[in-house]
Image (cartoon, rainbow, N blue to C red; front, side, top):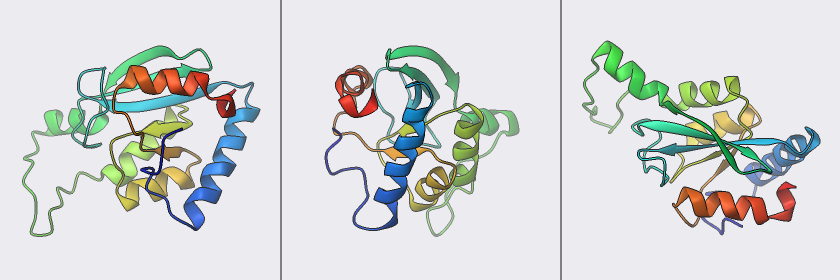
Length: 152
C-alpha cells in the first residue's frame, strides 16, 4: 500500500509492525491514524516542526480533529530558539514527546514524510505503527487506507 519507503528493511521493524496491526484490528475494527501537517492537506516533512497533527478514524476515514503539534506549542510557550548544535540537533526531545503524545491520544498508526530512528523505535515500543507513504496528499492516503482490505 505504501511502497518501500516505510524505512524498514529486514529485521525487528517489520515484525513489530505486523504485531501492531493485528492488535489494532482486534479493537472492533476501529483504528486511529495521525498525520503531521502544516496545512491539513499534505504530510509535513519534519515531525517536530510541523504545525499540526491531524487525527482520522477508520474504517470511516473521517477527520476527528486537528490539533497544534505539542512541540510547536512548547516552542511558542517557552520562546525556544531553533538553533542547531554542532551535530544538527535542536534538543526538542521529539523522539519521546511525540510518541507519548500519540499514545495518550489512542493513535494506532502515525504517518509522516520520514522518521528518525529514535522516533521510530519509540513508536514501535508503544504499539504505534510508523508509516512513510508514497503520496504526501492526506486525502489520497486516507482513501488508500479505506480501500485497503488489510485494515478492515
